Every structure is written in C-alpha cells, then in structure tokens.
Length: 311
Image 1 (cartoon, rainbow, N blue to C red):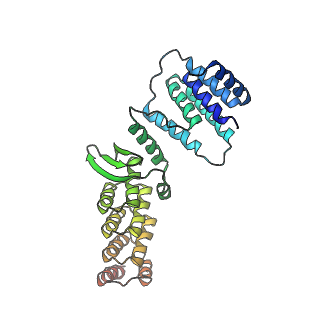
Image 2 (cartoon, rainbow, N blue to C red):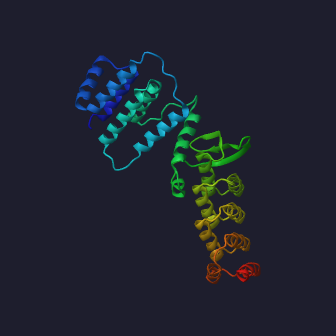
Image 3 (tube, one colour):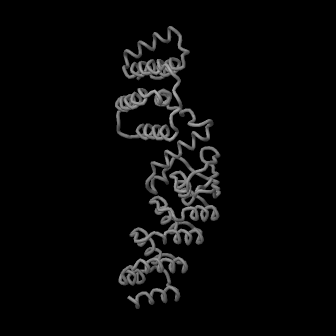
C-alpha cells in the first residue's frame, strides 16, 4: 500500500482528535479505498458514543486478552488482510462489552501502529512484567526458553511467606516483582539462569527454588544442566532435584548417560542410586557399565555389583 505511512499518520490524528478538516477529508477518501480502515473508523465512533465512564478491565483478563492478540499476530503464513479481518472481529467482540471498551480502543491503536500498549498498572515496569509473564506462559519446552526474546540476568531471589518468592533481575530493564514459586515467569527465570549463567551461586540458588516443583521445562533444563554445565556442584544439585521425579523415562536415560560418559564418581553414584531405586533391569545396568567411556572407580563397581547380585 503506497499510502500506508500517510494513512497511519492521519489515522493517529483521527484517534487523538487532532485531525484538521482537510486531513479528515483525505482520510475519508483513503477509507473508501481501503475498507478495513473504514471499519476501524466506524468502531472508533461507536466507542466514542459510550455514555458512561468505562471502568478499568480486570488485570488478569486484560493481560490474557493481550497475550491472545499478540500470539495471533505472531502467527506465520497468514496474509495481512486475513489477520486484520480476524482482529477487527476480536476487537469488536470486546468493544460491544462496555467494561472492555477502553481496552478495545487500546488494542486498535496498538495493532495499527505496533506500539507498546499503555501500562496495565501505574508504571512501565508493571506493564513489562505483564508482557514477559505472557511470553513465559506460552513456553512449554526447553527450546522455547532458549529462543525466548527476553533474557534475564543478575537474578536474585528472596523468600516470602505463603510460598511466594521475590525476584530482582535485569531483563529489558531492571525489574523487581513478587510471584508464586510455580508461576510461569518464575520458572522461566530459573530455567534461563541455568542455561546462561556463569555464576555457580546463582545456578545453585535457582535449582534450590525448583525443588518440589514438577514442571516439564524445569526437568528438561535440569537434564541439560547435568550434561553441559561446567560446575560439578551445579550438576550434582541438578541430579538431586531430578531424583525426586519417579518413574520418568527421560531421567532414567539421562542418568544412564551419566554412567556411560561422566567422569565424576559422585555423579555416577547418584545415578546408580536413582536407577536402582527405580528398579531398572539389571541387564540394562550391566550393559551401560560395559559401554562406559570412563574408567570405573572401585566405589562405582561395588555399588553396581551389590545391586546386580541382589537381583
């Protein structure tokens, strides 16, 4: 669309009420040529006729609504016109509910111009936290976390009452917030700490906060940690957490790999303890020992022999 930039400028003035008569006439001509803008103008006029002040939408509902819209915008392989029509319909659905009128108008502006939406609360920090919370909620596996557009650093945790944790970190800007320990954002911060941190203290702290939380992303991250993190203390702590998962095939395979490749005697002993408690087949354990790429220590051989002889 050759006039796309000019239309956007005129439409912004129209929404803010600062458009001149000549500019309004020009926008009307564009609206006749591009019906999608005409629909948005009509919707804006409808919102302007709301006769009573609309209350602020519920924060959790508004955050989810924004997350749904942003997720849809990121969908690939869709034509521009199709996306526009889809979101016009979504915005209409919200606009016809008086309590969501302000939110709908905000979405129109954000969708057209690609700008950050106004803060959900009173400041930019709270808005950013809401946005990265929505991103974290969409991540369901380790690969999502590794490709996350948000990178956390300088992470500090502080225990609070009622199983809550205060987190102080740097992301796009410095943030401090309070969430439940099993909140998606908290879990994402913990996982990224293990994936990217070179601070052993931060790694150990993150793993300690993950204790007792059964989450697929954390499990994958801990498995990645035991195979790739340089710090032995961190790898052992990760194995300790993974040992709490019962009857898990991914963890069994990860611990068998430890027996085959890991030089640390302590890690191999932890692996044997877990595998024997899970009643792994003696033949599988013996084969793993035979395929081991490291020199076996007497302690490992004795622990393995005791289990094999008793089964």
